[in-house]
Amino acid sequence: MTDKTLKPEYDIVIAGGGLVGGSFALMLEHLARDSGLRVLLLDAAPVAKTDDSDGDDFDARSTALSWGSRLIYEQAGLWPALAGAVTAIRDIHVSDRGHFGATRLHSDEMGVEALGYVAENRHLGQALQQALRDSRQLTMRSPASVERVQPLSDGAMLTISGAELDSIKTRLLVLADGGRSSLCQQLGIRLQKKQYDQQALICNIAFAEDHHGQAFERFTDTGPLAVLPLADHSSGRERQHRGALVWTLADTGSGDNEPGQQYSAQRIMALPEADFIETLQQRFGWRLGRITHAGARSLFPLALTVAAEQIRPGIVLLGNSAHTLHPVAGQGLNLALRDARALAELIVAAHKTNRNPGSMDVLQAFLAAQSGDQANTIAFSDLTTRLFSNTQPALALGRNLGLLLMDLMPPAKGWFARQAMGMADRRSVSP
Ligand SMILES: Cc1cc2nc3c(=O)[nH]c(=O)nc-3n(C[C@H](O)[C@H](O)[C@H](O)COP(=O)(O)OP(=O)(O)OC[C@H]3O[C@@H](n4cnc5c(N)ncnc54)[C@H](O)[C@@H]3O)c2cc1C
Image (cartoon, rainbow, N blue to C red):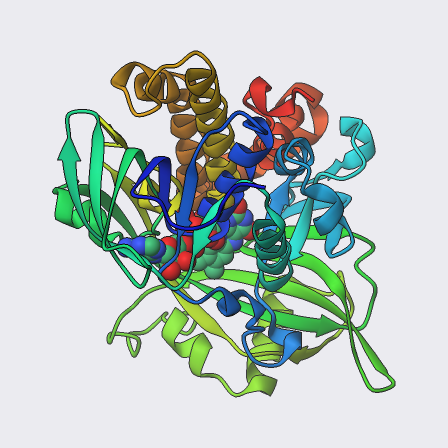
């Protein structure tokens, strides 16, 4: 076991131990096993935050993990800890309210056990935190933050708060500090932001019928809504079939009294539960029987934010600090995990051949490996948001034909499924 006292110098310092920074640290540990790579993970928030169940556990927030992400976690030895706490997505049912187009994606058609999985964030966080605590090689401090970054010719000098040392040198600083990265701001890394004038309403719902592992993506003239399968919720002797709703709605700001705005995010958010359920039932239909309960609702503004630079000598951005995707297509974490794996592989290869992991040739190789995947995933998320939230007749017809053709043409369906499964990039499916 590595001595875990804090050292004045590391090969890699990861600022941010969220889902991305934590997963990346564990990938490094797995790949660099016994190679002497010195890795420090710092998180500004206390570790216990991942035990937080967002209130009553009926309302626990969740994330859809693609099949590709399962393979990445499997390679890093983390899947066994997660497998017991995820719900498999066996089918995805895609439909357009009031129109003829509909398609189904089946896991057996794709030759996989599941198209993806839904993991409650607290289970995911707990599994990662446990693995980090059990780690033999990683050093971790939390709550401890990187306050300032001073670039050097061979890395960066960091000012730290909350740990035994005030300053630490690193050959590579990995910024995994989330979408509102104060460190990117400090370094003058600009963000390119695109607003969709929409909000995603997130809430868990209970319904009368078992979902049998089906996920639903339903396009309506007021925006798409998705229901992801969750494990049944038990309280006392009562058992409820449960799903996670992501409902995209127009963001009307304060102008929600205008005619035709009855489906604005603000208005739907404010409905009493019974009215909310009735409106949702009318939009979603009866595929899961009667909706019997809707939990706590929250709104997330839809935007796409991409950092103008992802690498500098001795610095690389990962996760939401590099690109924050809107939640509708469920791709943000999945893309970040593919980035993380590519970066971990390159760092470990550099370390094993005595090269500086923070040198520009290593970081440029990372960008070269991932920029295509990033561009495709961002374009896929952007396209699904724009195409499927649009009520213009020509676009509505186009997407209905698209859905119909997808069912008739296996290659098109396969393409859509591979994007959703995080397998469009062939690297992400190699065992
Ligand atoms: C409603 C919603 C639903 C989503 N659903 C999906 C989905 O189904 N599938 C999917 O793939 N993605 C989904 N996403 C996206 C996914 O949640 C994000 O991509 C992911 O959480 C990003 O994690 P992160 O670690 O980059 O950032 P964060 O989770 O923001 O973590 C950043 C961490 O950095 C720490 N930190 C900040 N500053 C410092 C500092 N200076 N020093 C040290 N530590 C610091 C913070 O304490 C925090 O722990 C969804 C997002 C939302 C909002």
